[in-house]
Image 1: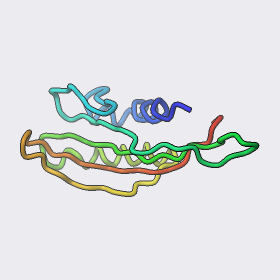
Image 2: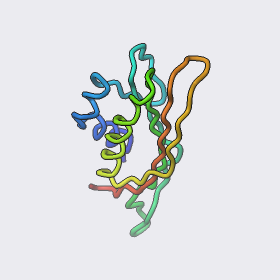
Image 3: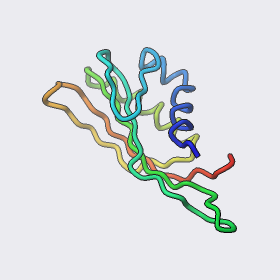
Image 4: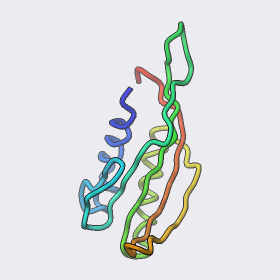
Length: 121
């Protein structure tokens, strides 16, 4: 099951999110973006879940989405759209943290999610 493709596809299909980002500025792991805002995401854990006849029928995931902005306040509407997207996928937010990266002078909104994807859906 390609959970990464499912998550990326859902984020990319959120027109309101893409409008706030100024385009498809969604990257896996890290970004080479010079323009703000943008999003990076990665999976912290992805394991097989429930089994039926010795076959895994689900994937349990925990993941992080990071929102990177230059101006305070710009991260909030983006976070709302990311939350909407993750909820549609059945993921639950487990952490939201506001950070400031001193070295780059960038605001970093960190969001963590967990949930279960059923195989075959």
